View 1 (tube, rainbow, N blue to C red):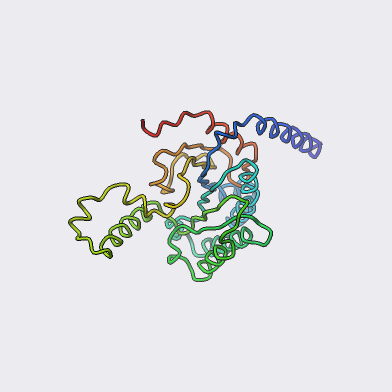
View 2: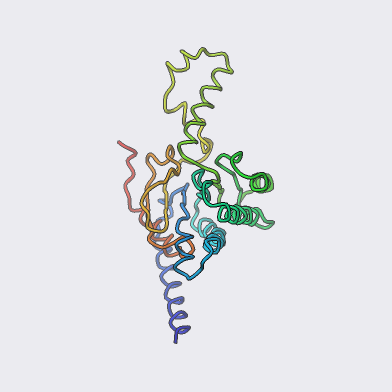
Length: 261
């Protein structure tokens, strides 16, 4: 009887997905989504696994599926929060397994036949050489790809670190051009910093989705999120369904964005 209930639920879910998708106003879809793939370790515990890596593997396996949904609904850019700079302080065994999983994920995104262009954001110099090489290699192999969503992989990423980097870069650029420091500081403003954040050349961030029920940014895209819409989903990331994604898009489409005006 269990398999019968699962089959019936699957059929009903597919019907509901088609219904939700058919009612989405495509002209109101976000161009750029940030996704916080949270809850992998808790999912592993709830599923009876002892090793947190089982949760991270399940979460990594969900990413290509999620990107295929983004392709289907016309999302142009996605930034995936895979590893924060704070996460680098986790236990040695868990961190080693997580980094290996991330290497596998970026390799899968860069595989032949995929349409996604991969761009790393974060401090790759904080990562082990093997992980940094894997991410840089995926970026090189996918450069210039067309036809699919453009994917930022945020690894070794911290929002405060990004802002500090942007400030240093903005000041350094002007100093290199021969501008006196007092003149730089006199005209220094938010626009100057914004030109040097990691995503400066990309579409503005429209929406952040976080799974697992947590309702905080945890340092994710602090600069870019100033006017981004937030959507918090109760399920853990490995359980995130197309229905959940469509509900997030529906919520976004129903909001009136005024950008502080």
